[in-house]
Length: 477
Image (cartoon, rainbow, N blue to C red; front, side, top):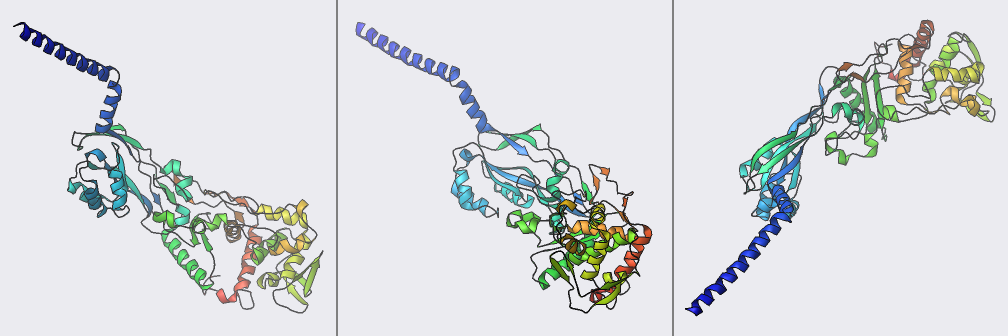
């Protein structure tokens, strides 16, 4: 009997020891490791995901959509819930075009509680994935940027990155207007990894629209025209600007080479540039109209003023020649502009003098940004009078020795077209829900009389005997 009691006592002691160990383990797990284990359990059951904000639209002047955000989905995974990572990867890889089965399998085999598998997935593809009903695989709301007109005005509009952030063009410079704020959402899973609840922690928001002065139809024609010119002359690039001279509204800003804003990774640096505002060059003979305009406004010449023009003219150490050799001749101011005479333009510039010539260059807006609402606008290079060399007045009146942007030239010529008023170009007509005012006042640079005389003389450039008679368009003066 005593022997049995001794065995029972021994068993009781063993049980008591085991119970003490279990109690101590439970106390350690609850007191020491409790927080860590609870956090791990929550990580396996609850995932916080970002819900991208929806970007505002970019519209042309007539309301045509140039850029818009569409609904999409992000595919997510709870890897430890995926029973067959390799098979799941193959199934998903057959649906998702931008990710390989190998990449998917690597993520599905990760020792984590959450993985992003694919972003910006089309809703049709997301529906296919949902229909597979694979445990541990789910989709959450996302968005993607679409450009319904393709490459049209791509350099002007710009493009966004993988997180819907603006990276180039107006998408970048107006990101604070277009970009909606991201939100956050908690996804709660059951023990099998299936989502059972979605809790909104912070709602996402929608950005504001931007309406441009660009006319999509005119932009399309301009892009076709410069694409043809670029190909014909094997040019590295080209730009074309269409401006309403009465208002300053930009109806087109076309560039080559182009790029697909939906495929930014394939774009080269050259194709991203808006040459209308970022490219500087010597304007050459196209600048002569402003030399003549300054002399007209100063009252130093009239269109009929006659000049004796030698075959060449020497200014300091430089001898200026004509584009084509000719004997000495007599020509009027109108003839000088129509025939694009280097000797004639330099003669007029020398009569103006360096100080007066420089003041007119700056009055016409050269040497400073036009003020158009577009990022990275160059101001060109215009030397000060103090920087002139002895031969500068043999260069500058014929558009050499300074650099300008295409938009500066378009704005200055628009002043001639509209009666002598230089207006700030306008690219955006509505911003933040507000109308962006046109520069209705402008700055008068030429009198109505001078502007009219210049327009008439410029018609001579296209007339028989002018330097560009071959590009005359019948019915247009």
